[in-house]
Structure formats: C-alpha cells, structure tokens
Image (tube, rainbow, N blue to C red; front, side, top):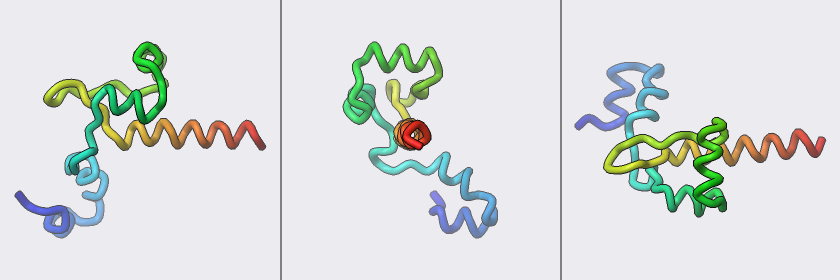
Amino acid sequence: MKNIQDEKKLYGANIENYVDDFYFEKGDLLTKDEVLELLKIKKSTLYDGMKKGIYPRPINIGGRKWLRKEIVKVIKNAIKDRNKKAS
C-alpha cells in the first residue's frame, strides 16, 4: 500500500480531501456506545437525532460505525450555535 505522501505526489495537492476520506487510523471509527459516551446522550436521542438530520448516520463496516470526524463536527456546530446565541 502506498503511503499518503506518495499519493499526494502522484495526484497533487487536490488529493487532500480524497486522502482524508479514505485513510483511517485506529479510533477514526466509533461504535454506538462510544458515540453515546462522547455526546453524553441516550440511544433514543441519537436515533431521533439521526431521523431529524441532527446526528450523522453510521456506516456499515464490520458492524455499524460512525466517523469520528462527523461526530466532532456535530460538537463544533453546537459550539458555534451556542456562541451565536450568546452574541
């Protein structure tokens, strides 16, 4: 397997998003329990939020897994919304 630097040399700077989407490190995929713990919510809240588009849906890779970066994005968006309301 080629490493990320080889891919960037081969495809140029535009490969950055492609590489980010397809190269995963340990911990980049979260289980449901890890998502619930990270967000401090109940399972029903997660599933209701997925139906409403608040939380991302999992991917099916060795079971249902969530991408850490998508969960972190939810947290960052919540912080932005809070800060907007405080202004």
